[in-house]
Amino acid sequence: MVVTTDVGDPKNIHPVRKQQVGARLALAAQAIAYGRKIEYTGPLYRGVRAEGDTMVVSFTHVGSGLTSDGKPLEGFTIAASDGKFLPAQAVIRGDEVVVSSPEVKHPASVRYGWAPYPDPECNLSNKEGLPASTFRSDPE
Image 1 (cartoon, rainbow, N blue to C red):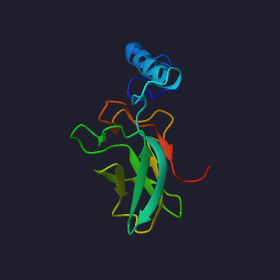
Image 2: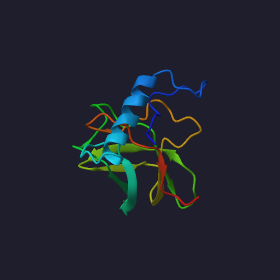
Image 3: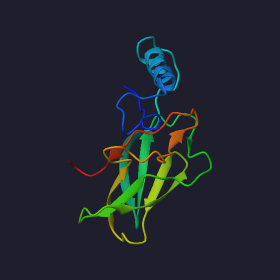
C-alpha cells in the first residue's frame, strides 16, 4: 500500500497520474519483497505527546528528514478534550511536527488530512519526496 493523496482526484477513484502511483509501488516492492535498503514510503504516524499548549507528532519513515518544500504546513487540525477540531498551525522541528492553535489551550488530539478527500494542499513529506499518510491521534 502506498500514499497517493497528492495524485488523486476527488471526482474519479482512478488517479490520472498513474506513473507516480506505479513508481511508489515499485519502491515498496523493492524494499519489502526484495530487501533493498531504501526509503519506500512517506512519513507514517508513530505517536503524539503534549508539550504545553502544543502537540508534538512523531513519525517513522522520515528518511533524510521532513519537509514541506519551504511552504507552511497545511492539513493539520487540533482539538482539546471536547473533540472539536480546529485548523492548526504546524511546524517541522527535526523529525517531528509541532502542532498548535491559539484557540486550543489544552490540546488532546491531532489529525492530518483527515477528510473523505484530503485537501490537496496537505504537504508534509520526507526529503525523498514521498508524502505523509493521513492520520488521527484520537481514538475512533
